[in-house]
Image (cartoon, rainbow, N blue to C red; front, side):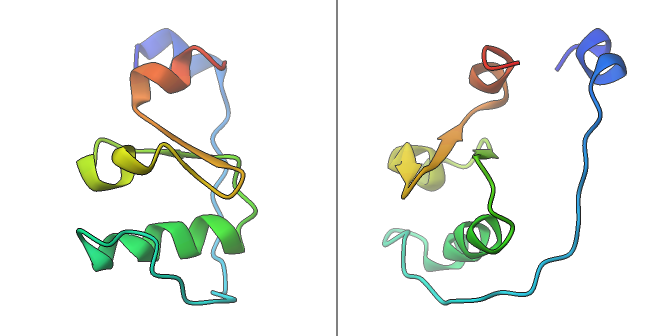
Length: 74
């Protein structure tokens, strides 16, 4: 991300309590934790460089994108 984008956007994070266990990423089951956190946090996006996550493209209504793809949504 460019510095200008970081300077003009507020990124908010919070701790979430996992609600459910999912097996969303067959090739790397440990990546399913990311999906679980996104579900618990009611996320719209997962921004990642992880190939296994990116291969999914979307899980339920959560879009899984690279940082460059995410910039297009801002």
